[in-house]
Amino acid sequence: MASFDGIASSDELAVTAPMAGVVVAIARGPHEQVATGMPVVVLEAMKMEHEVLAEGSGVVRSVEVAVGDAVQEGQLLVVLTPSSDRVAGAESREEATEPAGPRADLEAVRARHALGLDAARPEAVARRRERGRRTARENLADLLDEGTFVEYGPLIFAAQERRRSREELITRTPADGLVAGVGEIDGSRVVAMSYDYTVLAGTQGMRNHAKKDRLFELAERSRLPVVLFAEGGGGRPGDVDMPIVAGLDCRAFHLFAALSGLVPLVGIVSGYCFAGNAALLGCCDVVIATEDSSIGMGGPAMIEGGGLGVHEPGEIGPIDVQYANGVVDLRASDDEAAVANAKRYLSYFRGARDPGPVPDQDLLRELIPEQRRRIYDVRRVVHTLFDEGSVLELRHGFGAGMLTALARVDGRPVGVLANDPTHLGGAIDAHGADKATRFMCMCDAFELPLLFLCDTPGFMVGPAAEQTATVRHFARMFLAGANLTVPAGTIVLRKGYGLGAQAMAGGGFKAPMFTIGWPTSEFGAMGLEGAVRLGMRRELEAIADEAERTRAFEAAVAAAYERGEGLNMAAYGEIDDVIDPADSRRWIATLFGEEAGRWWRRPGKKRPHLDAW
Figure 1 (cartoon, rainbow, N blue to C red):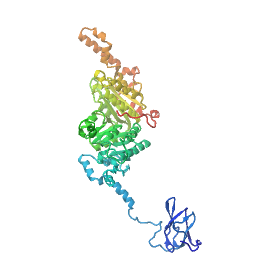
Figure 2 (tube, rainbow, N blue to C red; figure 1 turned 90 degrees about the vertical axis):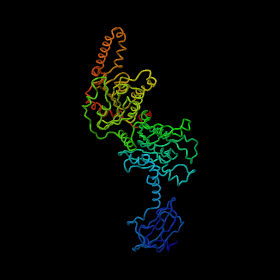
Figure 3 (cartoon, one colour; figure 1 turned 90 degrees about the horizontal axis):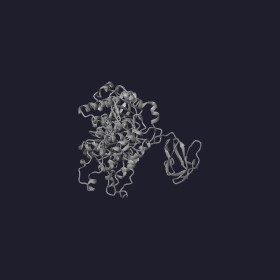
Figure 4 (cartoon, rainbow, N blue to C red; figure 1 turned 60 degrees about the vertical axis):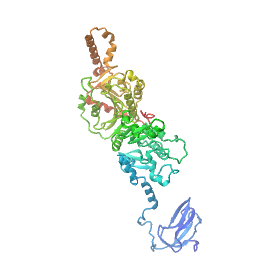
């Protein structure tokens, strides 16, 4: 529209183009009133629309451009005659305005998110309640600090639009059966994810694989621990929206396994966990399972399909089996207890906390009987030695002769290995060696000092033992011990014999930062009785009288015991000292000394991975 003369006089307001662009709308025409801050012209530049606002109130005298005109920066657009009259129905943008009500686009977003929440799925929630279990979202809410969860991919759905309507998939397969994101536990960030068994039996679909990939890469980049609720049935054959043959090129397993040894990985199972879900679970540093769990590398369908018979899900890897064979580290009564265990486990990898109460250390003087063959409860020793309530034993059901636990001394976390004399007299068998080796590697990977509590007659030997491949299994303790980068110390509670005792010191008594004994400690290259029988075989055989032979044997054993008692070992410098048991914590504190911390802490991976076994 043309103006009267195309020029604004000194007492008029000129509205000019702030940029080059094309006029796409004239907001106010001649003789219309305009308030300060109201749009008068709309320009399009770089495919974006920009409102040109009046810098004062007035009446439009002339419009100098038309829709479709190309204008240059500074070109005159509109001329206003100043006016103090209030514009009817208009308010300055500088004045407060009342909300106009919820925007439709925002409401659509909220409604879509709500479809995936438990409140929108009462039937699915009811089925969980019938089984005595919580929903995926309830478990994550219990795990994470309130208000910290940032969910990734809540709007995705199963890749099955060739088979089902989009509306049905949005409603029935929210988040594609995997609720996942980043949150905090006690103020520290973690990646947390839970398969949702109410969605296609918690199976692994194309899109939830992609979601896992995204979060695993984020965990690697940001060095975040991962907590995985792994309930579910493995791979999902029903996703048909992508051209695949076998789907063996998915990245999730590789990406998750690559996190091993870099960040703590925690797996939690309640109910059934089969196939791909179990494969991810097995990559975790620690597996926590409830009493109703069943874990297997193949579920009923896979087993039947392989011609291996028909089995109920509960018959495949039930908790009693998987706890005894070492798959499960921590056994929990229900979901709530499992989550509590996960939070407690992760707390040991966040450094020191405020010191807690210390048990009466004088009690340690009485926990090892003076009678050298009398058994005792090594767990009482461990729970008395460390901060009250700080001991978390792992893999209790497996490798009965070896105790492995996380604990604290004055609030500082430490890994603990102890022989249990109630099992094989404390001898280390193949399972015990495997259990100890993996625990050493885990503590080394995450920079926890190690304390060995030694009471062993050595490695288990004999034809039956050799059928368990002890030569290889025992060697694992030496290999792990020789390559530790964290400080370690050994306290010999009673027996310290042979190669087994050396393995309980990282390979030899000079390998740890200290090797000390309690007053009950005794040492030898092998068991004293066996050493006497071998070393004095000819002398003993030459004694015809059986009673006299027995007396000679017992006298030789007593002499050997005297030579091998802790005080004599310390006198010859083969151990660092024999101490009052009540002074043990003072020695343990040296593992955390400032000087030690300068050489054993370093960024990045300290081990290529943490062995699953």
